[in-house]
Image (tube, rainbow, N blue to C red; front, side):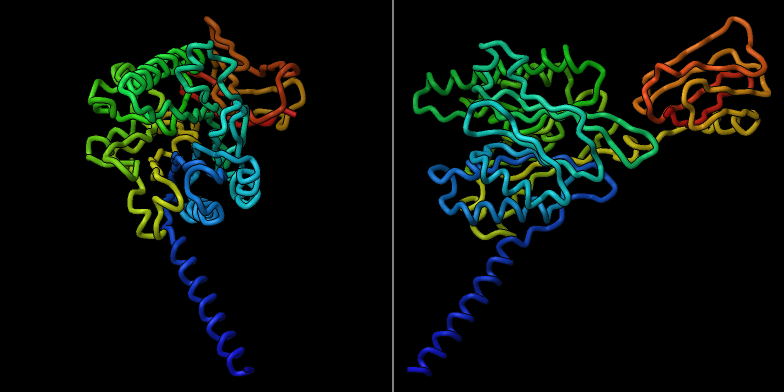
Length: 402
């Protein structure tokens, strides 16, 4: 009897060891992020946390989702179909050391959320855009209006701001042709509403729209009609994920269509590294049964120039001019009055904040000479740049307002 118990214990221990080995192998996701670039991703997690829809083993799905986010090590990852707040809160707590997060506030069960790397961004503002949409537009978005999160870069010599809009467009789930056509037109109308919103509210700003668009960019999944996002393509918005469409890739495990996309503002076109868009369609090589126990969608991601977003670049000509100009700027830090003295006549100056916005500007028809002062008592505390324009060139000086 004792020998049987020992044999059973050995067998049980061996079985547990195999389980741990298999579990470890099942979550052996590779690193996809790049430490020197900005990695932006979206992923539909298929009814995450919902026991009656999607993968039936909620514990396995949660562990795989958590492992994928941790191990792929992407900087921004937008999630769709977060369907249980308790699961979301547990995931957020597990990732808290690296990521901050926010989730949409609309009433639909399938919510959108976003995680961002804390070391790279501070959050400036968040909102679910139901307050910006009328009833017909909200219907077009299937009562899942985009989640907008405004993030500010940190850790560089300049600060920039990016608006991330996470969306989940109307799916094509109807059994009748009339129903599927209506879903197609809803995606069309949502596309129009999206363009109106960004061009009215985010004009000139940097933004990235990402998520589950539930349709492709060459032709629609509905009867191969014109893509419902034709208006955005006609307006020359860059979709990094269109590269994947043209390459015949699929972001959905059970058909051949790219339905998860990333679109950026024209102000970010020069920041996007063309040709870097990818879909993690070999996820099953690292997680056994991925499309059945984790998600029926694959993550889609693209890379942007992080250095350009966070580094203040001064042209060489300005550097040369700076060397020939002798300037005193004091006090630094300053509480109210900033003084400066330049050995060259100046015809203007400008003070800008770390977002490049002018807070004080003065230009003259004739040159200013000698010691000058600038009243900053109404300027908010923070880091600023004083720029002096002289006949010899341009001078820049960083200072702190207390």
